[in-house]
Length: 593
Image (cartoon, rainbow, N blue to C red; front, side, top):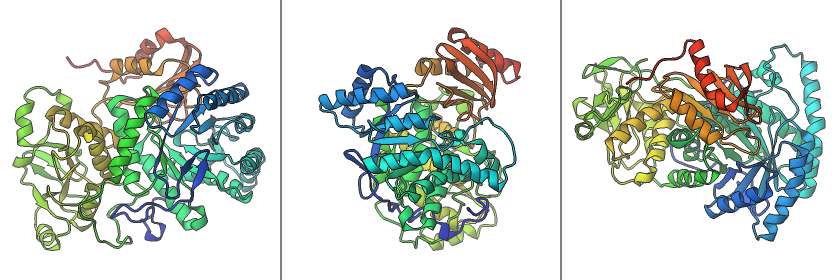
């Protein structure tokens, strides 16, 4: 059993090999057709088809397009036995065309579908939350006997699939999703990273009992904080269990959305873990054409593999300034910088350089104004390795505003971890995305800023942020605010959870997401989920305020929280009905002029 995830961080439960310099987490290799996940193989990039699995021609065309842009593994939604049977037709067509890319069948609810699909693919993904268990948001007490009985039902349904995969060289992904934990897990562990991990381990134990080890774990969530904590908790638990439990990890922020929002959320979650050496394969889930996911995934891998000019020479067991399994903001004293409150429980502020401020003029909306001008803030810059300078800073009787100096030859994440571990809690910290402004690639400035600043914010470090890698001052300010929103520390607009579409989707997700965003983006603090089907329906959007879910072809169900309140609405009317529902619940405000 896990220790209390709220308990102080224990170093023997280390979640990564070295939090002070990137060191790859050891993992066993798992072969998926011609591809290898884990071991010493490079991080593998995968995606998922958005078309109907029964449409063989469309599937083959999408697969070819994905392979051309560097996708190495393709997943398909397989909702029925009929879909599973059509995988044979698709597989034969691909092989005739000389395409040997490995295929993954994504199966929910139906073990018999997984059994048929396993005949025609190289890997099966099962969701422990719904492969056998059910989710009705039911609250009940389970006796030990009742709990054991349901585990035995899982064993009876899952073991035949494990045996078939073992005999035929098929790999498995045990893929837990935060929003689809079963009622049984929810009642014992709650809607927590701990519940996600235990749900997956139940299936892993069954596989290991049958001497099957060709499987990969995933711990996906739409909230980057939850996703990061779940993967860290899993990595820690696997390390505690022993070397034979070093299974590969598949990373992803599920339902990240589209455009800049989807890229920022993905960079915060995936980038944070990759930079700690965690992750053997990734998928960036965007509500866009699937080919758009691949360049983002490759850019995140390249960012994580960028070497530091100098590495921190710290023992891996050096205590961290944060609990990696439970979010808490680093404490600091409240004080004022140029009339703006900073530190303690004040909002994380957005800084700008004076040169940027002069270029901005009146181009920003009221929600995106910079709050602190750097040159007017009496900022104290330091090298966190300089113990003498830090001693002088810590001796100050008043709170100071401290940052890592530009030019320090360290990567931002370990540099700020070191600063936070050595700096008195009296002082506030300014986060930067880079210590070499102007040297990075502008097209990846968004991903760099989101991964570096977002990761630290999710660890509770940082009282203000400055984006230096983006040279356009307006974009830099907006990016700073959007990173704060993605990391869950500040809200400047509505938050959207949107699934990336697949063969189960019952409406056009891209156009519908754009329409809903246009109507509701101004609703600061409101969270709206846009889900293509019931699989990614009420569970995945459990913490959203409102939900728009495909219930049947051309029909939409609307939710308030976890509860469906309007059913089978014609798709043409559903967005306006969603707006009406938001108004009825008192969450509407008219957009500013």
